[in-house]
Image (cartoon, rainbow, N blue to C red):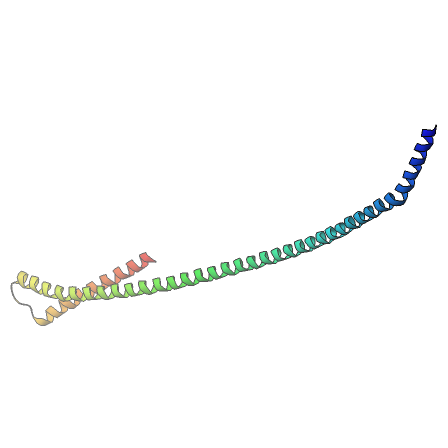
Amino acid sequence: MRNFIIELIVFLVLIVVIGRRLIPYVSGKMGETQEKIRASLEVADQARADALAADDERHAALDETRRTAQEILEQADRTAEAVRVGAAARGQAEFERIVGNAEAEVALARQRAVDEAASRLGELVMEVVERVIGREMDTEAHRDLIDEAVRALQADAIGGAAASSGARQ
């Protein structure tokens, strides 16, 4: 029993020493650890809030960038359409100018050809008539034949020009 009493006394002394020395030390360390954990949680909460705010700002900036890009694309489409319409109008005007010049040149060439043919026709008619008749014709009869041939050529030329411009339209 003596061992029991000694063991009991040693046990009680250990409990008192542990109660007075070890428990306050462990409690202090646990309090420090709790404070560190609480501070870390506050920092983590603040970081999460900052991250959410930054994410919201990023989304707002991204939306604004998308709107700006869409406006730029729409402006580019409008500009491209205006350039296309302007180029088409300039091309059409140039086409009409070229066609008008060509028509004028064709009409002028046709008139020259008719005039040249008329003068040559007059000479040919006179030669043929002289051969057929075997004598020279008088100037008045010659002039009447030439005028009649020129009128016929001009009528053909005018009819041909109207037919070719009607076919083009």
